[in-house]
Length: 486
Image (tube, rainbow, N blue to C red):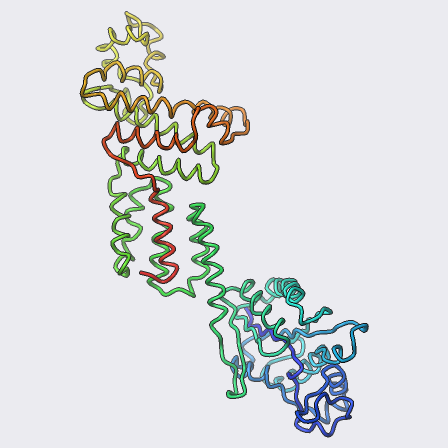
């Protein structure tokens, strides 16, 4: 990697100790000794004039920057000079201020002065614009065309210094703005002043870049894309203090694991960083407590939140999958209660009813048209579990007054089940799926379906489910951490 110095060339970037020795037509201001950049630059870089005047020439902007950076043979330095070169039809008073000839002169002068420090002429390049340098839009376009090309060239830029002292205000503003955007944490702005013999750094790039990334992270968090948010946070690690970075990483890792129903990993996400929290520690501990219960019932609760996220994303196939899993899981857990007593051939898969349980309940199952009076060759097929036959069995067994909440919960599950058959349109036929399709099939809105999920959960398990998703609370925590709160 190389160090890069990107510098705008302005009309005061080259000065001479003895302006009176130059032809009068090259002088822009006799009192200050300021030169006309284009004709003076062209004159002074001629071999004869260069040899005569080079020791009287000063480059106060860029040489102060080089004193800050330090030009050393073992440190590969690349300099890019941005100059103006407007076309012939531009009025002479403006065109004489173009800095293209200054840039050519500075390239020659820098190579001569810093040759022993390892700076060769080939390490100094010039890029010019034909447009009006006082136009913000045109300068934005210019740097957005130039800087990505520099970022992509070899050797790869490491530290990139942005010298924003020369050039027009429009050029400096856009070099700073686009440079921060393209080079990110590697961009470091330099400014020079008359009071100091060397340039000094500004914090504005860090603030601009961090603000931009914070805005990007906020957008990504609204989509609950925690993996992408984590990648963005890694890009600004150098701009965050260690505790802030660690807590952000933990919060996003928590989101990633909880989204994937890995409650155990989510519970441990803050283990190494919670000690560095202060004001937000109570919130963090609350998030940890929410995933300490790693039962199926707890994961069914989170399935409601995942269905909410699917709605926010417009991920309708995912939404139907969450409805299906919720309905199926609720029926299975209710069926396993002692008062219902359904037994499976395999508790892991729950794909068929246990033979002995089936035989003991045969009289009831025959009444429900689920079994034959006597065992048959098709018994294995009959014992296969489906949501439909499981609901029928639970309804038949939950007849007492004490089971009223179960019966009411089953009614809510019936509402939830209405649009689930649309999954076949995606799984088997690749037919498009939309919110309208789901709402038409369900005969209610998706918000009403989510409300039915919450009611069903409370009726079946006696636990209320808040309307707000914990992931929205997690996003607020991340926003606080990005601002530096801990």
